[in-house]
Image (tube, rainbow, N blue to C red; front, side, top):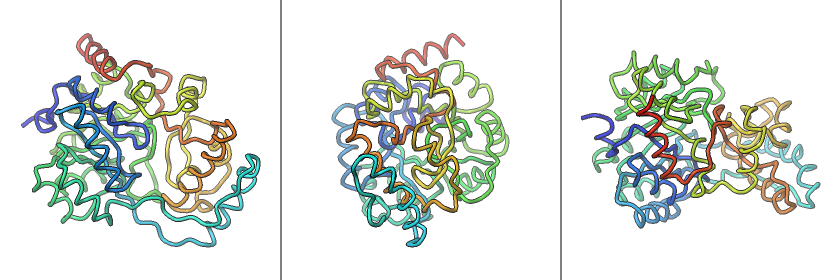
Length: 350
């Protein structure tokens, strides 16, 4: 069976499951257009995930990809957290707000979230995808036995081999160009920072499961290039941020449409994990901070989210998690279904 048949789609195009951006409405529009719509539920709980799946199904009977995070559960880092909050305190105070007195992880990892597993088994989306690694073999087995296809992100050949050996149906080759969080299993290990095309070709050569190229792909020419390297499909995230159906706020959209799109940077300061972002006041803050000074993901994200709320209340958008890939200047503000049709036409022409 081909990957497209496994995923239940007509086009080799996957809209990336961007937590906080990929709305059910956007995912449904993408799926209805013949590609694969996705929602990210890693930053919500089981009830929130079920609500998103239900909202998608009100709009579409097509395939849906639901993405979960499999990061290492955060441990207590009281001294580090206190120092980080003290560093952020002046930034809160400039907006007349108080820094939190303490921090805790704002959401669970799927590796320990039994309620999320139960929700996925009850709702049975066509696809479940993993970021930051994998859950236990028992959790993966339960999902497969429910008839769910499994995808997972790799940033290296070693990670790709681990995913294939664990039984995923396809591996997402996440190049360093990609927007949002690096899918590295261990954020503190050395990162070879492989680009999308090199990583895709390496994984195609070394794995016996389909490969999905992701990172910096914004148009049909990029999709065609990935397919020529042996990928079975391409995953696009930044390309969909400007769609009217996305949940990106006005500040995020304005930044994406500005010169900032030409200068994306990798930062850990916002969430505690490396993530590619449009440059803003938060990335400047983090430019001279050692990773050892930042609490673990997602604990640090609790502070990042609180600071963004305080800034937005004062009409300052520069502390948002404005994730975007290196192809950001190519973003088009089209309705999601129209964008899929344009991408498909460009692919055919290429």
